[in-house]
Length: 531
Image (cartoon, rainbow, N blue to C red; front, side, top):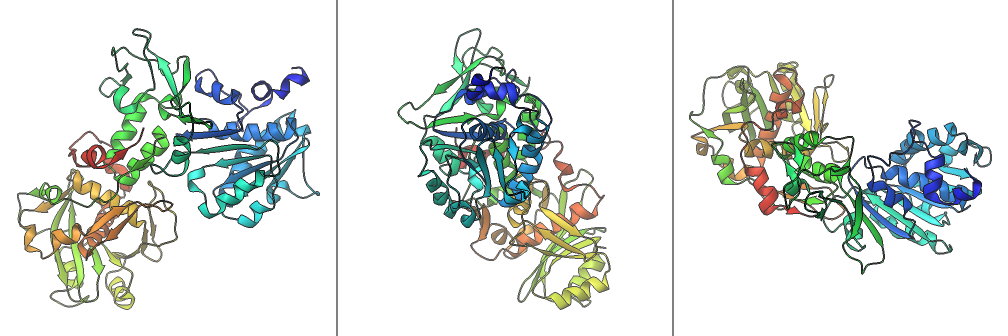
């Protein structure tokens, strides 16, 4: 390769760049990447699904800008810890194993560049920074800024990033992220761009179209079909980037997860089916990560009709043993739910009520433990810490305390943490309630036909509303007393832990069986879908 041709980024990246696994970039099954890599417009926005090749685009162009143009790049991630992991896993292996690039890198002042968050490549520098630290950002004068995973940035510091280009003639800006909420972050930036979408052409009728998960997918045959003539489409065929809004000057790319060659159509369908029975958090992750679309459902609570649909032909109380319980500790009462795990992995409510005491032969948690031979009870850690400790001593290894820690980051799959030494459960409030509401909607929780004899049971389950606010995580807020809602949430966790040692998500493995339309109705009627 002649040296002068390396001044072209697309030529350079094909000739020089290998990813952290030592592989060349895939432009054959990822044809949508060709136009993206050829585009070096000053201001580009990428709204993307996960694993679509954009991080490779951002870091390789950063290295090219430093090495070929001799310019400085400010590469910003949401947090410093994420950035350090990214540099160590995705950047350092590339630079150190490339015969060409290894001769171009240099440390600064003899110090380890990973610690400084700084790489010198040729005559240019790449500054790696987290969006949380404004002081580190304002010290950099850059010719190009890269905002990676923009939707998770500390918003107050974004203006400082923008100002780092003021002294440069180049003034290149790249913004990329999986979206979160409609009209927020990367989605808002995309709406302000020329809104490019990747289209493929139907070989039969000639219609150019962006493949849409809900309009083009044949769920039964697991195929992609033309919306006009119904012929099968090849999602990996030659396509085009079509500009939807040519009046706007910013280049914006919507990178649809349907075009990901590492995921089959069957796998995408299964992800959706599992997500739609697993609650709002799981649905949001599916839309954001798998489809590359913003998603929001807000202002929702459990409907009476959904609770009524959970009723079965039995009366409470019933005789049952080997049950599981959850307790919400209030000022005057201990609101308690007792569940029985059925063979088909649904949960039957066998008793609910508000008792006054921890101990005693009547109206107490001790009585409930003995009457229903409770295998595991999950109880509020506060405010009655002394009484809870006494209960744990009375029933060793059968009582766990629970709390919703405010500053702990959980995930959709791992939204809880069991401590088998201290007998504690730490639980993500929003995600766990999402799963609980999903179980109610899909009738995984059975209620007795006389459930109305429990005062305030329905009203307390319906007292919390799911809200979403800009720059904040979705959350459930209470509009009134919601003790039974949390007691049921704790009991659900207890039965999932204590029955057979299975992972909590195991009983979502057959999403086609026994579904009610509740959550899907919320999604399509009350929810907001943005394309």
